[in-house]
Every structure is written in C-alpha cells, then in structure tokens.
Length: 445
Image (tube, rainbow, N blue to C red; front, side, top):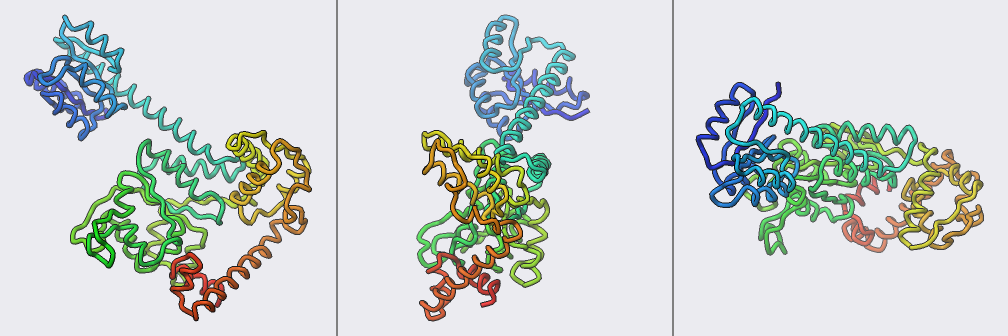
C-alpha cells in the first residue's frame, strides 16, 4: 500500500491530532496548519497528496483560501470540511474547485475512502495530462518514417525518466533544437528553457554567460551578473554546438554536471541549481575525444541518455509530408494560398540528397510559398540544384567537399587580412577563437 501525505488546514488542533491518530495505521501521514497563511505555505513546501480544508479559519474563510490553493497547486485535490449547518457553503466550494466535502464529526472509514479516492483521481488526471502533453509535443516532430517513430519513442521514455543529462546528436539542420524543446515541454509545464550556442560567443565570454560573475570579477564587470545556469534553475539549459566549448570550460561544466553546483567568476561560495542539461552536436564526439579536442569524461557524462536526430536523406518517406506541412505553415503566416506541388516536382525533391536536411527543405518551401503562392509548382519552379540528377545521396560527399573548400578559403582570407592573428580573424568571421582553431585543425590548414 502506497504512503500518502495529507494536509489538514483547521484551527481545531485537537481535530488534527485525532485525524493523525486515526490514520496512523492507514499509511497516511498527516500534516497540520491552524491558519490559512500557514496552510498555504505548508502546501507549497510539502506538496501533499490531498488537502483537507475547513470552511472557518481565523484569518480568512476556507472559501477565500480555496482559489489561492487552486491557482498555486492546481493538481492537488481539496476536500472541504464542514459542520452540519455549513453544507450549502461546502457545496458552493465544490462548484468553485474543491473535489468533494465531508461533514463533522467524521466516520473514519469514510474519511480514509474519500482521501484515497481523491488521491487516485488526482493521480489519474496528472497521468492523463502528462500523456496528452507528451503526445502533443513529440508530434511537433513531423514525420511517420521508422526513424521518426523511433525518435518519438526515445523521447517518451526519457520524458518519463528522472534523468537530467542528455546528448542530442545529428547533422546540421536536422532539428536538434526542436528535439530539445519538445523534450523540455514534455517534462515541464511552466519552467525556463535557456539556450546558448557555444560557437557563437567569444571564448572569454562563455564562462561568464554560463556561470555568471560577481561585481569586479573582471574588467567591465560593474555589477553582479546571473549566468544562464541560474536563469535555467528549475528548467532546462540547452547547450547547442557543445563540441565548440573550450577545454578549460569543459572541465567546469563536468564539475557542474557531477554535483549540480557551481561558483560564479569571482564568487566565493558554491550555488546549487536544479537544471536539466541537454547538449547538442553535429560532430562525432568520440572522434573529437581521440583527437584531444573534447574531454572523454565529459563525453561519457553527457552521453548518459543519447538521442539521435536522423538526417532527412534517411527518412525519405517524410519529405512529401514535410513539404505540405511547411507549405501550410508559411501560407497561414503570409495570409495566402499554399502552392500546389506536382507529382514530378515531389518525385525530384524526394530523390534529392538534402545535405542541409530539414532546414534546407524548410527554406526552399518558404521561398516557393512567398514567390508562387497558390500556383502549380512544376519542376521548372525549382532552383537548378534540385533538378540535377547527380545530386543524390551518393553525391553528398561532393557537396561536403565544396562547402569545406569555401570554408577553407574564407578562413585563409581572414587570416591573411589580419596578418595571421587568430583572435582578430575569428572576430571577423563571427566565431570564437576556439571554434576557429578547431576548423583549422579539421581542414588541415
């Protein structure tokens, strides 16, 4: 038999003691509060399974306290306690959100049955809400392919768990941020979701962004600054492009993941934070570990609950579905009729390699919807690269080589313009110095 905790809010302390004594053998723990203010605070901190609320309290009536309890703790059932003459008020309380009522003096068997029935109904309602929420948010991920069904199942399993560290892998453009957001929304109803791109900030700023800084900790720190971990407390911190995190900061992140405590820059005390950490990468972190670019202990700490976002080329059954999904989405956004895609056009797009994955497809559909709203889209409406028969999955490596060649030229130009100064070159390219160093190593420059 499961243990339950109930909170009795009643100014008759003898009644609370009697209830506690009577329910002692029923595996029910009884907490007591004699005033409305005390009861509201105890309800918030103890989160009981059921609340018994008396209609008459010294500082306010039970009818006045009821809406505050329902607003603060909507999932906890409230049973009103009334005297024989207060039955009408108790019925009114039920209409205003109480689950049921019971009159004094109690029949103890009746009280136990009412408490257990209320707890079970509340538990079932929370379960139903959880499954409905999980269904809604995981179905933001459009697609019926086996790969997407497997991804949804993974998210559902992780959504039920108490795990607090996840690693989302997959090529660029596969929707890793959407996966993270969907998982966050499954687990939380009203909690912060804080996102940071580890490649977008200069190396010297990332630590302050993550952990915060005290006043005077460094030049320009004129006041205390909360980091993103503090802002994400009680919710989710999403670290995109985790492979770009500098090695010294990898050590600090590992320390935080081990005990969920951190110290701001210039701070002297440890701060606890209850944060779910989701990290995402388009790199093979195992390879990065062997090359000395990523800490092995951090990799294994992050990879406790791995999630893989599949490339679009591997989920060909979803391409047509995604095209129509984005067409309808952008048509609503623009206030126009969606384009009509011909069978031949869809055939060509399904055969395309999609090196940019869902992001590339979304951009194409947005362009077509804006420029050709309501029109029949035959193949000649498509850019030339989508008509090239050699642009199939087998030709993806050629595309990758072209991208790397362009990236190599941009980096070399930036280094030449800054006389080889990596910090200035990184600033000119809009990436961190660490990210530039990684690209130089990867491209063999």
